[in-house]
Image (cartoon, rainbow, N blue to C red):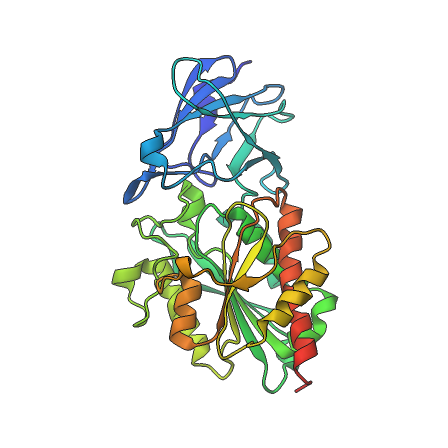
Length: 381
């Protein structure tokens, strides 16, 4: 039985707000994407679920766009992936060509023959709230993990935070680090953070856990991936342009980033303030880590060289200073640096990490490099 329009859903968890689909041939469809809240010129990511009848079918999609309207926010700047179980993902890549009925330069997706009737499709290596909540029980079962719900998104989804350390055997003066992701459809960045968590809970991290505390908000904008919104929340606020130098203000920055900035401030005012802050994102190319050096971790080139030595497969470019053209106080890595004076990192790139395993490996490399840096630079305390 051929697929029909009724077999597709653009609703969460792998949603694309405002998308419409129309059949133009057997297993051949055209999709027009909706625009982001407050930014109709920004196309939402193509994400959907095939609810039934996919087994044995070879799906072709033509995704149309208006170049002048969409040039500031490319929905096709990253690959997509499909899955039968929402956990094991296989990448699929955009192709280009003429439309069947006059559209110029449609972006096409041609899938291999499906093996199951139900198929999930999402941006990059997808990571949505349901992914996180499937991982949380295993992580929280560890005695080294404390979990908290910082608040709820505009649409009512929870914002989870993890704190990881060997609390029973913690050093007298531990160091602390904060890892956070802002944007909605950057699944590769969140799998990178999942790799950090898995390493932190491994036997290899025992010494690090005794001397370091790690705070992680893997999904600070849970409405984003549910709806295919790359940058914004339901109120149309760019989630990486919301840090406020004057301090948290929900009216100005929205509920999601308000609770996150409030939490960062609480950690900075605690007995164990942060040494480093990391903002996780993706853009085209290999992993790219940029640094704003501060009063902590001042010799970051040592960390750069350690990561280069560990990175046997070339997942990362060499770590470098933050690019001046991107400096903006409302960005999280910039804002935390400016407000507190600590060293901050922008973990970008990674769209050449085409599988979940490559992304988690990249995350493990980052945290291993950080652990080795402190092993070399700091005496036992």
